Length: 87
Image (tube, rainbow, N blue to C red; front, side):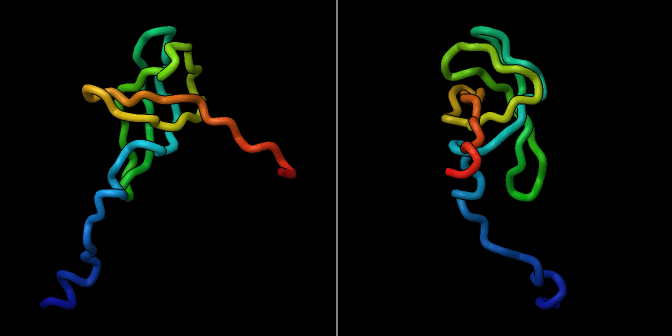
């Protein structure tokens, strides 16, 4: 029974569920000084959260962002820039 029930069991690590430095996609545009929504993958599932820009600037729908920190249940994000090719 141990082989069947616990074969895929693994220890949960806090680092796997921490939001800072998680990459996400904006699913509801963030208006200037307003709140939008992001979607991200964590723990093998797709999740969503309310989000604000950490600079107060707008963030367009579909933009790739990085979560800088979580405050009162809202993720603060900044746009993520892809590294230039050849660097």
